[in-house]
Image (tube, rainbow, N blue to C red):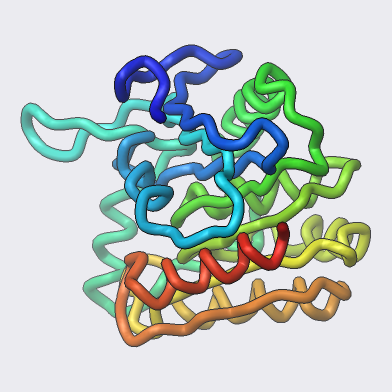
Length: 233
């Protein structure tokens, strides 16, 4: 059941939606994408077919970002929307791989404090996310000294390449799940494959699902997530 009747609750410096499962089962933490909210990824847990009843945490981005007059969403770090729209128009996808996105450090600190407040052992945490939430989840996973139980990268991208390349071999026992649309107009497919290559070259094993689509989470990815979570049982 969902705590607080589908309401956000404070957890460290962030607000989250929580779904309690089996107390002995791992906890899945999913970070949403830019302009979304904790409610955006929440329906995923309702459609998965898993052997265990996992515990779920859906963090709510600490930044408020305007979407259109009268509407706003949440984010983990800022995005230059004008530059993004120009890149889409020119079919020239931005590449974050050479840097840590501005504001990622603030998001990282808030997320670690939230995870500390959660009180779940790191080896029982499966971190994941969509888009910039996937970048944050990957960054958190690679930087932490302990090895988490899993990592799910949904339409993410490679950032801070030199650091991730240094850190990833220390997580070689970790198995990851990654998905990406071949025609993603927001975060290019080539960059996602570059991230997959970095992880595999560092000794990590995982599944990469490419789908005929854009910046989304289609049915084959939902099925893949179910397989992945069952494999971690």
